[in-house]
Image 1 (cartoon, helix red, strand yellow):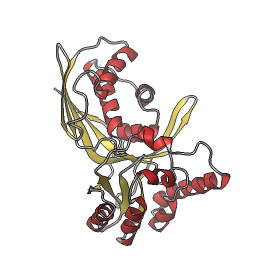
Image 2 (image 1 turned 60 degrees about the horizontal axis):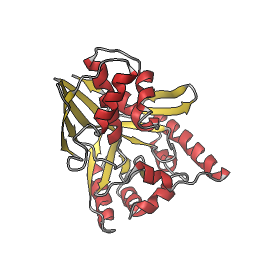
Image 3 (image 1 turned 90 degrees about the vertical axis):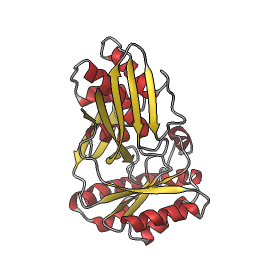
Image 4 (image 1 turned 120 degrees about the vertical axis):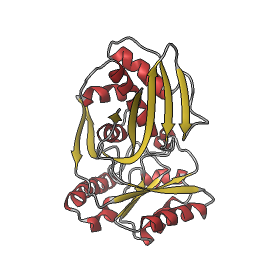
Length: 296
């Protein structure tokens, strides 16, 4: 039996829209066996809603990967154990995409470079800020180009913990992108460029006092906040309990905080803020996944 583990990821980190991604130690696991027909079992998050036939994203990607790499398609029995909440801004779809590709590679003893994997993965999700950290682990700075994705893995301070507060409603990436402006004022573009640069510098030099300013954003969070009841109160509450930086995780609706200590206080405060706006939520304290996708 093949076991593939792929980590969750948080992206954007405030001002770094479509540029920053961070792998987290919360994993979806995929157990695969060759079979004479497709069989899909989904456990955990999304078990009531995810397809159990060949419309399942993992299977669709696997079938496409067999075609892409020119190998015979072997039906598989898939047991999908999801620990990452679906449609919450934590990269759950990226895990299925990468898991499907890796299944094709492993079953056929193929070795390809990350760029080839990502080229195929982008057919299903054209945003690298979740895919790259889920594949490689760690803190990723990335940019799309005509030649493909350009990325770097940078050191992320071991002292920092990531507290995620996950509200009990889904928000599709498509819907979260629809509210964004197609054009932004020059002052807002400059604002985000400055803070993206500040974020990289603050993390590399461990100037944690600068993180609160570095995650401020004018390009996506103000617009997506309209889709997330209590968003600004959640941020305020987390800061009041000592969070160093608070930001929307990916397209949301999960809110993430960077902390040196007091993770429980911060997590509970965010949950309470959502509750005051009629939204149930839960929190987790996570660390950075340094490895990324793994195969056993």
